[in-house]
Amino acid sequence: MSIKCLIISNYASTPHNVRPEAEMVIGLKRRGLDIEVMTPAACEYAGRMAAAGIPIHDHLPRRKLSLASIRRIRAVLRSGRHQVLYLFNNPAIANGLQAARGLPVKIVTYRGQTGNIHRYDPFAYLTHLHPRVDRIVCVANAVRDDLRRVLWRPEKAVTIYKGHDIRWYAGVAAVDRNRLGVPPGHCLVVCVANNRPRKGVPVLLDAVERLPAGLPLRLLLIGGGMDSAAMRARIAGRPLEKRVGLLGHRDDVLGIVAAADIAVLPSLRREGLPKTVIEAMALGVPPIVTRSGGSAELVDEGRSGLVVPPGDAPALATAIERLAREPEARRQMGAAARDKLIRNFNIEDSIERHLALFRELAQPG
Image (cartoon, rainbow, N blue to C red; front, top):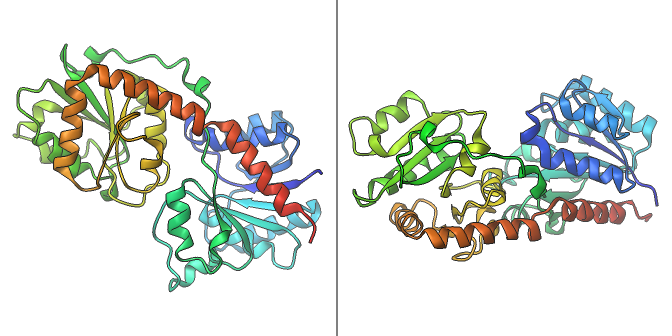
C-alpha cells in the first residue's frame, strides 16, 4: 500500500544538527513511502532530499499561528491528498493543525523533550493536546511517559528513538590534545551543551571542585554561552581556573569529543534523547549522565557509562573520579556504549518504526 505523507520541519540548521531526522526522511522515501517535505528550499538537506526524489515545498512556518502559513499548508494538503501529516516543531504543529481542518489526513506530531506541557495551558491545545492529533512520536520513553500524564488519550504517545548511523562518525579525527591545553597524562573530560540553567553546568563545576587536588584532570566546556563573562567570573581566581577550559561555540566539536576520555551531561530537567551523549557513544567515549529525561535510557549503568541523580554534585564527583582513575574501565565502557548505539539507537530501526506507524494510521476505517 502506497502511503502519501507531508512532513513539515526546519532543515535549515547545519547538516550535522539535523542529520538523524533528515536521513530518516530520505530512508523512508527509499523504502517506498511517497514523501513530500515543506522546508526552506535553500538549505543543504532540501537539496539532498530533492535529489532523492522528494518534492520540496519552499516554506517554513515561523509563528505559532500565521494565516499565510495555514493557507500554504492547506493548499498543499488539498492538492496532494496526503494520508499522513507529520509536524516536527511548534509553529509547524499549530499551523498544520489549522490547515488540516475538515481534511481526511492523519496527524502525527513530534515531541523531543520532557516537561512544559499542561492541561491548564490553553496554548497546549494548539499543539500536542489538540484533539486532531492522532499520534505523538516521542524521542524517548521518558518523554512518552511524561506526556501521557497530561494527555486525555495517553495511548497517542509512542516512542521512536531518533536513530544514528555509526558510519557518520567514521571519518572523525581526534583534535590534538596539546592544542586544547590538556597536559600530558591528564584525563580529558568534556561537556557539550548550550549553557542553559537546565543543563546543570554549575553542578558540574561544583563536582569538579570536590575532586582531589592531585587528580590529573582537565574539563572543557563546549557550546553556546560556555565562555560567557558570567562563566569566566565563576572560575576566576579559584582552583577551578587551572582545571577548566571555557571553549564556547566550536565548529570542531566532534573532534574534541573524539579526543576526550569522558563525556559528561549534568542535566537537571527537561532532557530528551541528547545528541551530544549519542555522539560521544558513537566515538567510543564513555558518558556520565543524570536521570533526566531520556539520558538514562542511553546508558547501561556501570557497563556503558555511569548514571547519577540530577543536581547531585557529590555523586557526580564520585563518578568522574572513578572513571578518571580507571582507564581500562573507560575503554570497556566506551566500547560498550558504541555497541549499544549500534544495537538500540540505529537509523534503520527508526525508519522501520515510522513505516509501521504510518501503515497503521493509513488503514481505512
